Length: 346
Image (tube, rainbow, N blue to C red; front, side, top):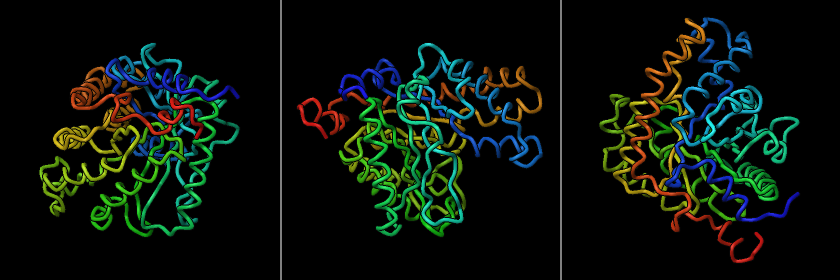
């Protein structure tokens, strides 16, 4: 292993950010979620979706949209060909975890991809490595401690390989429906707790990838608002501020499968709140409607849809990043990097 240096991580992080130091990345590491979208469009079971269709879809999306993104997040299972199709200006993040979790085992524990390591992902071209972690402050201490140790190991591996570590936090609660009213009531607390916990230096996290701290289906004025409103606009903004206050490393927002219109509203609230988010890793809000275009009309149909609607979606998101702050700014400097600059090894 090469000795760990702050400059190595910084160089790779600069490959992912734009000239302002803001991350405007495209997320396309979906596997089971993408299979479900294909299954719906093809009217088959997810397991009957051919792998080559996922590979080709990712290739086309990468080729058409990455000229408008600072980076793309892909998976090594179906996305390596797409990595080769990305624009020269776009950096590459690779996912380290297997998709999904075993629903028969409480705790939603992550598993790593077989035959991969941080070093091998870097050899495959990764400028950064991403790990997805389901996390809840409502879970018992023993289960969470196991997850803490797991993230510590991955963080140490990335630090030893001198590659930025992006930790994607997906908030949930045991025995509670993810998108329902009951979880929406406690989501702000769960997100705030997770952001504070994984900002600690022991995890070596360079960037947190998080959902906004409120479920937009229950926020006043949201395009996806349901009949039940749990948070006024100002209450939602207060939750943005509370969650951000606990983060001492840069953080970016993910779209969590919502529509482009709803994600734009979420980014408007982020701007109004004044939180120091450093950009986005936006996936389905940009390209999900391209799946039926591809299924029904092939590569040409997908290309036409991407050039017409996908490009509009990604440019809409980019226009909402004016208030985002550089991940290299003084207020966003990771404690881990600061310790390294002082000559202290974490």
